[in-house]
Image (cartoon, rainbow, N blue to C red; front, top):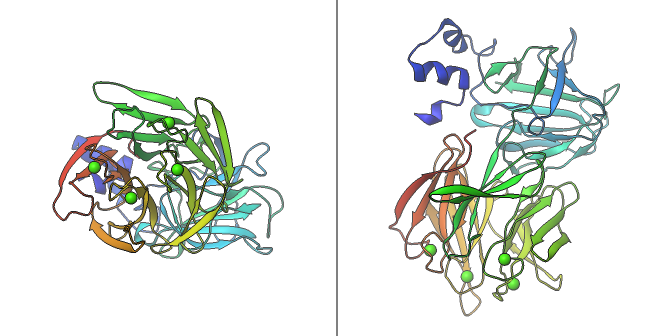
Length: 408
Ligand SMILES: [Ca+2]
Ligand SMILES: [Ca+2]
Ligand SMILES: [Ca+2]
Ligand SMILES: [Ca+2]
């Protein structure tokens, strides 16, 4: 029952069969110090140390944390857990100032206030560790810091991080160190490899090689968004990242680095060979309206609306014609919607139910038949589940599971 184990303290007790008094107290008295149902991490990139304090009369609750560290003005603020942006106020001047609220499972919420910049928009899905904004001193604030709350049932709850109750006044290193699932043919053998992007100050792409250690490519930072593609058209994927703050793609090739500025901070990067010439291009799925904006090599832009605001974008060549197609994944219903365009230019949509729970989508040609297949990655168990069929939209399919990456 891995999905129930999102509270490391309790899970450890359950797996050893010894339910200690401390573990029992975890389940008692909801709202009065009970462990949250969501496994929250600190709202800062992996390994950063921050000091959290409160005071009597802290509005709206002494359970709210003011986070500080040296030179903290402008430092990145990231999501404590996956969720949907419930509120994003990029221009606030009173109270919380510029702030973000993320809604998680079971109606739990996290608040991030007094920001200098907001990088997300209402309605979009954010993954754990995703950039939400920058530390600032907007609104009712006397100096740069992050005002942070965990709420349950609308009330400010006692904050917990990494399965432990937070001790006010303590300095802790963020364990918001997450893998992001990626896949694609990096090694040139025509089948797609399983890959994770390991968020860190010096991030890495970890490429699975069965029977031997993963191939590790160092590229990107903790708050970059991974985006991979065959930028030089040699048949193998290359790493890439997009910096949300500057909306800049950095695409790495053996010959050097290509940079492309596209979209707004909140947009999600995508990549594919839109024109089928063997070299991949980039695009974004716009967070404000869910429209894909695809960039041609000459800079021309094509807009394709697809899916709902909170859906996650996927790309792949579903019909095997050489042109990359678009799709979206609805996490709540665990359903892919795949779009292809026929020879007459008519767009067709097909839905495929696959995955469950908090799974994140991945796509890759697992069987090397030229058609991109579907898959999901379960962050709780760090397991890829791959769907294999002659065509990704076929009703019948085989599935296989592979553990790869670090569980959250
Ligand atoms: Ca390449
Ligand atoms: Ca191309
Ligand atoms: Ca296609
Ligand atoms: Ca395939």
